Amino acid sequence: MTTFQTCPPTSMPIVSNLRDEFENSLEAGLLEEMVAAQPLSLLKAFEHDFITLAHAHQEPPLHANNGGAAGVPWTTWLMLGGRGAGKTRLGAEWVRAQAAGARPYAEQRALHIAIIGETAHDAREVMIEGPSGILAHAPRSERPSWTSTRRRLEWPNGAVATAFSADDPEQLRGPQFDAAWCDELAKWRTPDETFDNLQFGLRLGPRPRQLVTTTPKPIALIKRLVTDPRTAVTRASTYANAAHLSPAFIEAVIGRYAGTRLGRQEIDGEIIEDRPDALWSRGAIEGCRVDAAPPLMRVVVGVDPPASARKGSDACGIVAAGISEAGIVYVLEDATVQGLQPSGWASRAVALYRRLEADAIVAEVNMGGDMVSAVLKQVDATVPVKTVHATRGKWLRAEPIAAMYAQGKVKHVGAGFADLEDEMCDFGLGGLSSGASPDRLDALVWAVTELTKRGEWVGPRITFI
Image 1 (tube, rainbow, N blue to C red):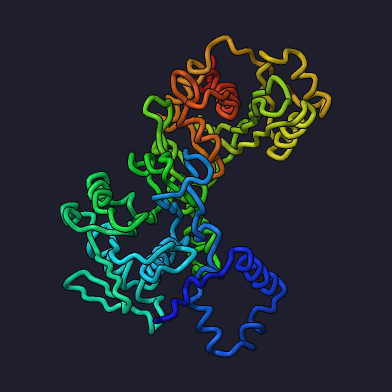
Image 2 (tube, rainbow, N blue to C red):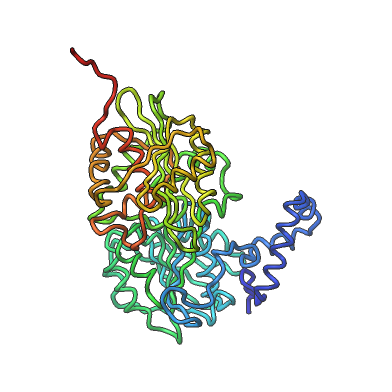
């Protein structure tokens, strides 16, 4: 019988210790010397010993971790990752392990495996023949034969994998499997119909299982799988696999898109979605993003103080914005903090005021009254502090500001506003869906309102006498 090299019966503690040694050697600059000293046969063995050098998000989950009781075995492993995070390589190694029945990825050998790509072309060119695909990483002695006309991989031990296209859900009617690998499910044209047909076919063996590798999108199926008690979820960003990616890609692509909605989805592997009744949408905010602000006539720091500093209390919203001569507001920075005593958040607000050479701090005083102004003055008595009282609800205060975004009168400078933008796109008539206080949004509203006098720009004007 052929020895399967990719997933030897090695305990995870031993694997972790070996991985630590590699990392220590890399940090000490000794890795190249260590590799050069090894015989070629050992280096080839390591090349196919995936589990030893796999990232944490590529290690097999022990049990379902989304809604089920601890210890419940998983049926679906959902690996959500950014571009280049190692999803395809994981899928290829997982399929190889299923065909061999090799631990820790498989508990028994799978004889009938489904491989489902977005299209037939993707299944062939990416999952099977691609540089991270099944054929590329199979040792010669274990390499399956590939018959493209039959869409069929056949291993020497009798295991068979069949490739399917998500464009043709009817292909999955009839065949039966004991394992399946679904790649880029979030891109499938008919995800529900294709996935449902697959579930009816996963009926062989004592525990049929499936691996789903995908860059997430907020489609209903992905959200349903995340909350399914039989699902185990692992996540990874592009950064997790940066050592194996082009430095030019890291510098150009990640540098450009990091922090944007597209970057959070395609790089960080986050599920980014809009709330239907929210005042802001992701698309609208992306349309208001700029790389830099022009010269600004006035800059203010908006502060929404918390009612207390206890653990779990509201954050202190701190957002800076400025206005140009053309009357366009530029949101400059979100410096919100949580869990600090009044002197702590006041120091943070004053530090931002100084760094941006702002003109004033605008602070809501409904909760703290004179205390808010006093604590800011204790940090720096020279800071101009304008106090404001909330006489209307949060929705009514935010609505004219949202209208200014829609009109292109407010811009975000850069992409460092992920948490603020999450609040904006989750703020509906009833507040945030979590029930928490929109502290960052409140600070933003106070800053923009101060600069525009409640949505109407008051700039230089001529008065006739």
